[in-house]
Length: 440
Ligand SMILES: [Zn+2]
Image (cartoon, rainbow, N blue to C red; front, top):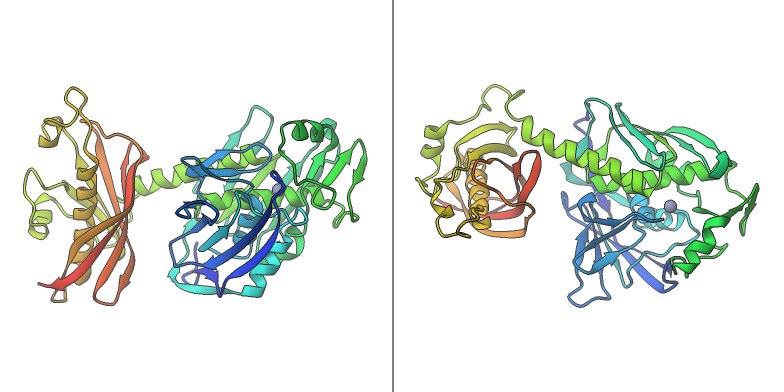
């Protein structure tokens, strides 16, 4: 299981580098900035108006052809996997990657330039426990093109990978635990490779304007064309492992498990990442009722009403299923057609208004803060909501699991909570809610 001493990490200071992007051939400057605990990895497009940011998460993956592209609206960030692999491989949980183009530099086709820049900046711990994902049972995906990926329970992050080229050429196998030292020495230097027969098609699609033998190995028949000799006899499978690490970083939690990958690729890697994120959401929605330590049990409606001043129709919590330590709470609310907010909200098409979901999150988070300040003379008041996203509609008959987690408490004055509403194992809405503490 997770050791208590495992903390989140970020960079000690900014790491800068520049180079050429693979697909467009444009010059790009990239700066990796330190970031706060629980903020995860984000990209910022400095070249666009208002400098939009985007979370490096599987929910934002747009395409997986040759490389992994994330996007939101019309904004795109292409080929995220090598910089993400370097951050994940070196144990960085939180960072802001700023760029003045739509793609990080390709470097020599490996993750070396990122590793060197991150090492130079330094990696430091933050005062927050790491977010981990432990599979409880095997989780597998299989694609039509013959990729098979399985995640098995294990105490460490391990990858066992079989790479196979066309007609079985360059079939290679490697199995290794991934630690920062092993990643840096055995995986990060492995360069990207491309089959000669594919190069023509990629050029026609204008996908590799910046491509050259400086930043990729070209495989033609049985021979290998590259600027410098192979760095490892099995460099290809090592690069496949590098890509798996980068793509699985999109799960947003560090994996403690053994990935067995046969003929992996970005599409298959993303599919596994999606399956893990789904399993995590499902589990956080379902795991609350069991394994709650004594003294941390739930609250029924009467007890909820002793804490919250709200009454029907404004009470948005049926009951609290449980707490996890001092930082997490899960509550439920069943939505019926009799809820007054269905009157007049999209007549004939009853959908729960988003503002009521925020209200539900705020009430549940308030109960968590009440528990926290029970012995003090202060009480938490809801101030504002940030990063609010409505992902799916909520209909009459749905039961909402409302999760709130305390992500930051600044002294006795402010608290920040990350909240989710989950229906049928899917996140329907989420937001960061801020509270201020005032005297009772
Ligand atoms: Zn790659």
